[in-house]
Length: 193
Image 1 (cartoon, one colour):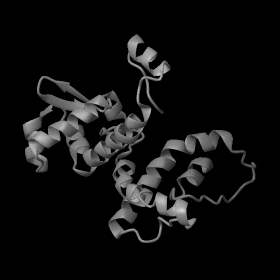
Image 2 (image 1 turned 180 degrees about the horizontal axis):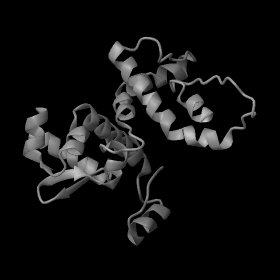
Image 3 (image 1 turned 90 degrees about the horizontal axis):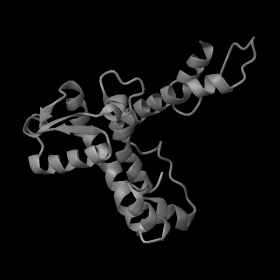
Image 4 (image 1 turned 180 degrees about the vertical axis):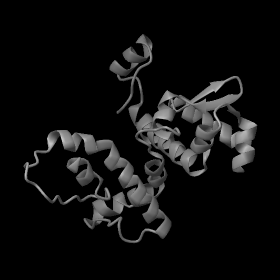
């Protein structure tokens, strides 16, 4: 995480303290995160997974998006290495295919979409810090947010279950396992295999 230089001049500027890091931290990260969330929620990532090489006009028309604003979003996603542009045709990049493609082994569409309700919760951080009262994000979610949350937790469990399997000692005679943290029992299932 954090700033990375793309060349010697940027590296020296960072080392010399000439790069205004707070500007990048406050603006760049959140805007990129929100861009990915919106790309998933509006259907852009799915559309490009289904129709690689689609031109902007087709994407905007099919998804009922403003073409100029959609282009700005696509450019941000390209800068994040999720999309490629060949001429006027957009497609998922290798990284985009890995997480949002039709054959993604570890898909993250639900997790990215659930980022929007997570942001709603994060907006309460200042109140939490001032009052000391936490936020229960399980309580008060809409039915739609709860559904996408469950899908996001399942995506996460699939991504780390292999690590638990390789590193958690399980007695040979074990017959039960309590699996918590919203993973639908996926980690327990992986342990039993």
